[in-house]
Image 1 (tube, rainbow, N blue to C red):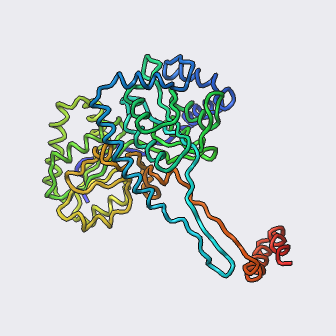
Image 2 (cartoon, rainbow, N blue to C red):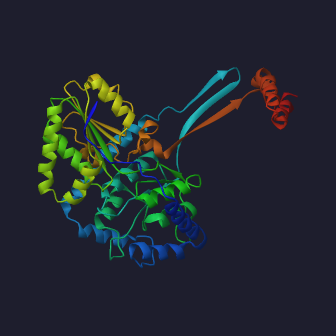
Image 3 (cartoon, rainbow, N blue to C red):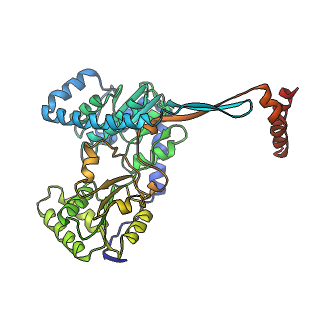
Length: 420
């Protein structure tokens, strides 16, 4: 292995100062509720709106502020996301009951979570696509109350109209103009105007991520998201222009985004590096993309696809593109990734918007132990059991004696009293 372009990327650690700042805001929201929400909305988002909930007339107004083509495009994306989510839901059609021991009938069923918050970031770009990715799977899963929230635009009391339209098309039941730590606190603990939810999903900045971490337990979360990342495995058959474009598509997210190329061909590596520089010249977002690529981008030469696979599995990227001659030879060996894109036409951008898979994915090596947001994020698998008198006669002494061995005599008594 040879690193042809080095990266200064380091895992972002949460400072004590940030932890304390988030903790103080959450405690304020918990105690002072709506008063603190409005205070932080004014402080951080410069909005003084009194009604936190977005009413129907605001949604109607938003539709008038965007063009018809945008609405049509959103509906295409929404339909694909919904169809894929429905296919995922069908994989849950395996509720069962089975007698696994004489008189012992066990079973499981899948139960939708009752309420959820889709947190849609504001920030540098209106991430309206995230609204589709979070709300639609929840809807398909059967969540009864789906809330959505996003911070207001700068110098405005309104959510970006594109984001608002996306929330509506996706099927949100309640929409709120609120973001940041205060939003996470509000939907965790509840306020006078906001009822708490059972799970919070969606990406955010480091403050939102830390708030989710601190609130976890009081509320469910999807996972803790970090800067976006892509890793591309390529051989000599790959198109350098495509790869350079995909790396920069990731880098323009923010200054901490990460693009990595792992290739078996040094010539391709040089071509990609050259193409990156060429694209950057005309790229409207080059200020962010260039700094991100310069600081965090990486090009690695490996001697074999086997070595590329091992390295990819170790890095465990959020997005993984495979652009090699015989991709099927290595696809099954790749085990750590958020979402996989196979072949040179399968650009990661399609997954971001319209192909149908979810773009809310694990980062910072979390794909070693979790996948991204999907229908299953909003469904609980719960077990049940039914015991007969025969089961008690056969298993009673076993359960009783195991309880005694653990020193839990009330447990043992709960069995003994039934054996009589």
